[in-house]
Image (tube, rainbow, N blue to C red; front, side, top):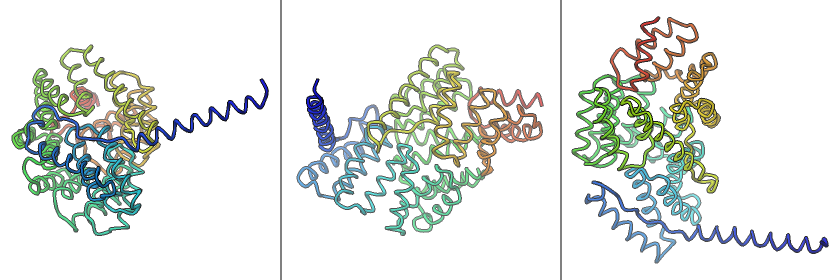
Length: 444
């Protein structure tokens, strides 16, 4: 074939692919998003009817005037909130991002749009990107409490704990409310102050309107703090109140499931978790169900569900290859999912991938340390464990992990101290880990 013919064919093919790319871009730009129907009790609430009607009205306004920045902002905010309510982040984050980007094309320094974009990035675990945008937004408006909340979240996830504390102090000084109190609670927990964390989360609950998703989320977090301090009675009470105030609230159902699990009522625990899993898309429910099936003597169900979790998380993460702005990074979660299947090499691969994104985060370092422990590489676990404990967290799971790692590396004093502190108040966490911790402590 003559060279001129080859060049002609190449030019035609090049032009064809350019047309495809442009067409795909325009189709993506024209893609519209609406509210997806809710299921279960959430579909019967007045809140849902109001939300759905408001979304329809906003879409009509944008259809008439695409340059209506207020309507674009309001619709993006609705999508972000709906992601929290339903757990369908993969859909609603893309929906919100479309309208946020519409605004930023018209006004690249729009503070609210930048704030929402940062929030969406954090939701997708693109923590570094989210923090960078939040810092830019803060420079535009340094007197807005909400942006400091996002700065708290971003700095915590990136392991910048001093900066997170400074942002929380600034946030609560501007607006003491549910959002600021709950972040103070979280930071106190990170720094090992569980009584202070409980007090701050109580203040968060009291500052919210009963039944609102944010209020009941805070109430569930309060319940979880009680679980970690061994006060299951108060934990169960707050989960029950959350269900009374917000019927069908998945995270309160899961809380009651954990209480039943601790009491070895496996059937009831599984029933609570299955109901929660049917209401909200959250792989953590399925991950905990894996543990419950193992404890109840149903290993085939546990193995099957483990595969579902890994496939689902991998699918969500791979979407980032099609859209650089979105796609849920889930490597830390995948590391634990692979641990449950005994695939330690894949667990380590994902744990180190997450570590390379944010090497200062204590939870990520704990994950790497624990994977090395499960692989039997105890000495390799130590430097990551030391970083995981740099804030002097009293999280009983972390302390138990630490005690087990120290026991394997020959530091009996540190092993005994951490295991005793982890187990002294009989906190509620995974039964298999607690049993391993108790048995190791007896052997020291």
